[in-house]
Image (cartoon, rainbow, N blue to C red; front, side):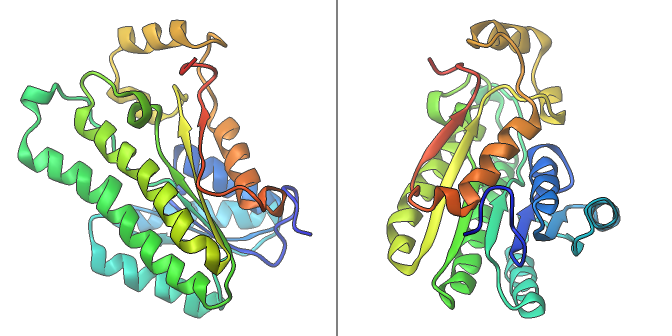
Length: 251
């Protein structure tokens, strides 16, 4: 039985593994013994992060560059990983962008960029990875949704729309892939202390912190711990869920 504390002999791919929640997830999976392949937009940074994981946890780790708006490269990257390692057991899809812009000032190029990276790129990653997992009829996938996608957020209409799409994607994919032995879940973080907060005004951060039942920001590791659980066999009967990790912000 593979538990939350043991991912030995498991191949884990973390999209967006060089920063924030993705980085924390890659570290926890490496600490649990997984072979980790992480991606980021910067090849050198991805390689450095992988080298650090390998040195710190004694596991095999590889860093790759991946642009979620480049659909051809997504397929090539996932297929290359599968060919090199023989399988993909776990996928964390954490890569994405956030931009706070009033709806009336959101330009078409910005809207398309958010859709391309956050939603269409995620669909391509999920589609290609699922095909790899189907070969062995097993696998676990966690997508990164957001509280914005569940409740909406002023100044983040398009971003929220992409994250609502991620939630729907997780639920629909879970129904389709469940009979093939593949579980798909999502986490919807609240206010998490990562570099994405730089996109929010300080008064908005203060207001949302005050609305959070725990009256504080969450840590990336707190979300990553939930992700690791959902990927583990301890969550073997959990699929199609969008789990809020928000300190009570949605209460």
